[in-house]
Length: 141
Image (cartoon, rainbow, N blue to C red; front, side, top):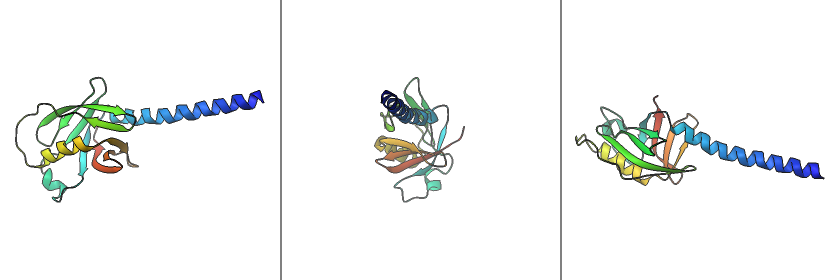
């Protein structure tokens, strides 16, 4: 009887540990890469029309808790917070001040709306509102 209890405790410990490590593995995918936007939700204008010259990019710095990149024209930096698969972004910090169309504003506004993230079968990063992908990025590094 003691052996069955011990085996049951060991299996339960392994299951709990493997669930937590999956979340850490997801977090680790965020870091050490630059992600380039290839989809934004809600716009009636074609994606290439929003970003004709350069697509927005984002990278995550684990040590500083900052996300930084470009919004297709200007650089940006924003604090982010992770809790499992939940993510939130602070207000983007100072950016350069070139005007390059509506795409950059749409990108930064959408970042403020997301509340979770995940990776699809192709390994692309999805920033979600609820369970709906709002921004999708492909890894370029």
